[in-house]
Length: 211
Ligand SMILES: Cc1cc2nc3c(=O)[nH]c(=O)nc-3n(C[C@H](O)[C@H](O)[C@H](O)COP(=O)(O)O)c2cc1C
Figure 1: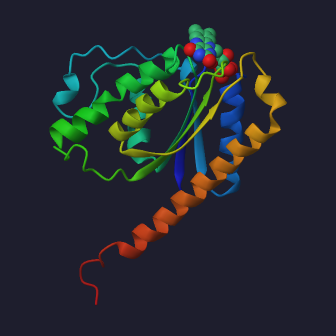
Figure 2 (figure 1 turned 30 degrees about the vertical axis):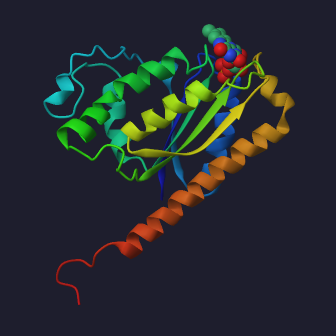
């Protein structure tokens, strides 16, 4: 069974992105995935202090709630991340979490010396965003931010769902098509991860001592 982490990045517990992410979580569960939900505003996580204690062994040295997430991030097969657009990027809760994940970037590129730009990320990530305005460039910044954050945690940006015109809490309920799209994306992510697992099992080398 695929294991997916679902991160809620809004300060609003029942905000637009939370409602959309709940739909995606439900879709993924219906398709057989195990999904663990994490509400970032409930965690006490310091911003990255840029002291690079992680260069020693690939673990962050700041002792706070980020430590509860580190091993889950190593174990997951897929990720869902939902954030409102705040000044053309993610919310502060989301950005603080992302910056702390720089420990994975350090491990991958500095400690393990993975080839930058030539690394095939093995996980899949779904990003969900909501913004109030209709601007053409509304999601340009955030998509770059998320793409490179996902790369650090060995994840390809598999799909991003970016919804405009959502401002007040609950606005998304006026758009049943958005809710259905989020649910379908969650379902599709779970099925894609299950297919990846089958492919990986089929292409794995035979166990030592086999015929
Ligand atoms: C601090 C702050 C900054 C915001 N910046 C933007 C912005 O740059 N562009 C935009 O379209 N909406 C902006 N918004 C509106 C939110 O993106 C919008 O209300 C969204 O639906 C909130 O999602 P949520 O309910 O999941 O928190 C901002 C809201 C806040 C509180």
